[in-house]
Image (cartoon, rainbow, N blue to C red; front, side):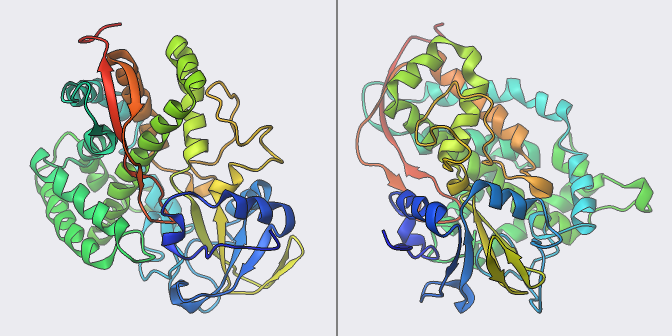
Length: 409
């Protein structure tokens, strides 16, 4: 390869296989690469592609130079290729001091105690989903389990009634599959906004025993009893619902597929459950559902020998970082015993994933339940990937399973 061969702004380029060969070449020959604009490039702009692990870490740890809010004369920024008008208002589209304030208020809900209370409930729900699996015939694991367990978890946290959960998840899916560079297309955001305002008003007037209620009523005493505004709460809801449900769903689907494709690793994990912790980290490294993050350059700067200009878009590709041969001894080998694992599947720096602990809990509970109940897993049909270059994962994973027996050890 003599250069970049894939339009990285085109969602359809990610419909089947992640272009690892392109990023292998970039890491080796052009680690800070200027991507010229194409007909698919949002806002009609080119952007910098940062592909090496150490360079990406430098970007993520210096938000003063590479912020998530705005830079230059831009009025919008965000984490996707397209400029977003909500920059500075949403947790992951903001920088300090606004980011610090939002995060402190939101963290009041995501306590260790609150997450620990979820574990028993998630196990019950995981087993109920497994009970409904057909034995010996093909079914879609993504719809039957990978989608449903994270959906139930995030809806418990947000206090979303059971009857509303599937509709909200469908809206997120439609947004992700839309032919748009946005994480969720505008028409679907509007529907979720309406619902978010209704449930936030309900939590404000009738507090319940859920994390969303805690966040709605959270205060910062050292900032004059500052609370989240209704707009901030709606933005948080819109962020957390797809981020909490979709990324873990994608890790579940692609993670189980990876285990099936590597039967030696599957057997190793089955036989030694103490490897679950390292296996979950390896699944996140291997699948990296959140493929990239976008930043803006705040001032003219020389970065790794390239001249970056104020206002330039810059994209850090976590999937590429998690395959960097300079950091990982054998990055294209899937190893459930790999430890320590310095992947950045949950991001890094001030914007490290808010619900990383929840995602790890869901994967631990879900995989343990599957291993306990299912004797064999076999793929049976064609896989289907979501054509999205921001959040990547399986839309369909047809499986055939054989039960061990009800709750058999």
